[in-house]
Length: 429
Ligand code: AMP
Ligand code: GLY
Image 1: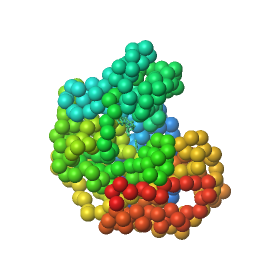
Image 2 (image 1 turned 180 degrees about the vertical axis):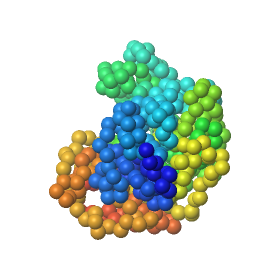
Image 3 (image 1 turned 135 degrees about the horizontal axis):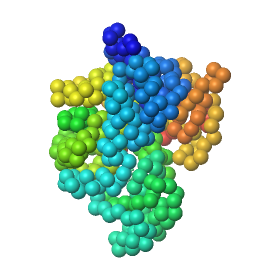
Image 4 (image 1 turned 30 degrees about the vertical axis):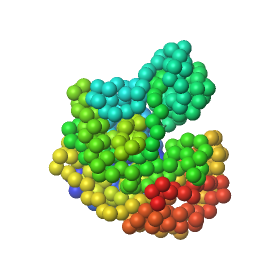
């Protein structure tokens, strides 16, 4: 089988089909090492720069077979579901160079209780917690602790398994919901946490199991509407860097949270390899862990990729090949900001199929990109296929310039069925 690598360039497969994967594909494509780029399943925006392949990305055997048939030199796994399903274990066992943690290491995202146990074992600062498989004991705990309090389904729940309860009644209702089966097996066990006040920020670290390399900081806006009001979403916009994460705080987080966690994972025989998303709460000059994710954030990935450009591929390769100790990140003094355009109704149910016009007239360069999150092509037009549909991303010398550039693009998109927040970045401006 001819490898793309032997002929000079690499054949690269990215799993996923959201804005995160569009941004990954955009950055990878700019690197001259890339020969053939395939994204599975991809979307209408990704199809403009890569081949899209229709494979079941949760089916390890199907992914391995596809990699072998297409002489894939490097596999990048975007979302958490294939990681939790063990796709990285299968591809590595088949000798395919893979970016993304094993299923055992991805438990840092897939089980909230597991993450809390690891924090306890390595002394990483986080909210006080308790786990319950029994509804009556969980209710008693809520009544003993009082509100505000945080209720979490243990397992993966597509970002919906967390309730920050302002009152005891809300907390008890969340317990009823979770033990009542709203989240299926993910809610069979529930974690109850102390409420942490403060400002949230995300920190991204590459780790090859031994070396940890800080990759960048970002902040996202989780509420649907301006002024951080309305329901929680997967994220309505993001910017990088996050000024709240000062160099001193990053050093504290590396020393107290990231390195101890990675050492504990290695000690248990399940070293973590890939990108670690470190969700932090910052209060009174100190950071505590909110959560880990085993992947890039979406839409945080879009702003990170906009800033990293082609070197993102070199960094992910160094991570997968265990060469991070000899690798560094070249940061420019720049800022990136992304605005999510969502179908009206999101995060609730939203209609599919509305037509989005005006995209072809927008600039596409290293300062401006519209990354598609939920789109398809139908009869030559771009249509919306879900809640979060586009992530309009720009880079500038200042955050204000990046914001102005992003909203100038937003204003040229003709999509009456869509909405966005008009204040992404406000906290840092
Ligand atoms: P998670 O999926 O664990 O990140 O939780 C989703 C969101 O809930 C986080 O981004 C926070 O905004 C919030 N959250 C989670 N845990 C806590 C906590 N212990 N205290 C305050 N807010 C929290
Ligand atoms: N934007 C938050 C996440 O990707 O989980």
